[in-house]
Length: 345
Figure 1 (cartoon, one colour):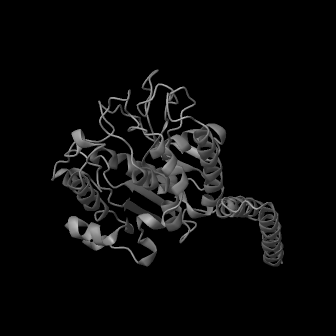
Figure 2 (tube, one colour):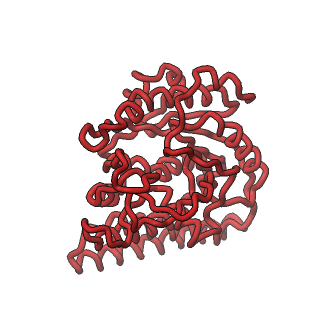
Figure 3 (tube, rainbow, N blue to C red):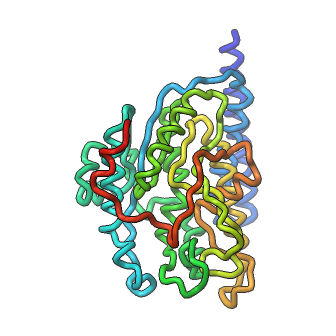
């Protein structure tokens, strides 16, 4: 009988969502502004589905399994904008980091996945051969979301996040921002295939020293059915300084997306709030003059979005691990080829 009530409630909820979306579409069409229609529908659908899930599922659901993945799309460094750092930020550099990450993934005692540009990955990193994903794990740059947001960051000529002034060599390209902003969506695409599993996404260039932290996170989350958050790593306090090479950018990013973990059932609420905050950042950036840098800050990436998500919705985001200061750059040192053999799985 309880299952019948739940089924009836679910049916009514679906009907409510459909009716609401039809009304919303009609309103937007009548207004003549169709540009934001896809984003608004996705955001509203996720929020309604999240509210529906919370209202129909009051029982704690144990973590049924664990899955870990990494995500990689190649972005060629721009010779003009990033000339001084081309060797360090070359595709060869990131391919080496990816190979090390794949080496770790193959040692896990649970399923591991490789998401992104499969052809490029398999051609550059032999250790990733056993992690090829199915069609659902194939991503191309032109199929990613948030293109308007990524274009806005490039339009304002934002430099890398850890740049303290405009003389820093590396400038962020639209493609970089697209990859960053889509990491949560990629994680949730995989997570929602198994909604009660814990799904972890690690950076394709993950610092090998963080693998023990990732394993500790998995152990903790497996034991806590009450945790419905997106769990991420945390940046330390770098003190008062500017970011993205602009004096107007003073928001200290607290969220560090070297690794993220969530259960698929909890994705709709987190994604809806994430999209809402990102939309606000885009609106702010659109109203900022290109020069001079009088503010407010027009630069952002996924970590800035998650910083505000944690601030505005602390019930949706949690931090795990001891923050570590990054010495002088936002990239890790080159990896030792044998470091993966030193971690006890």
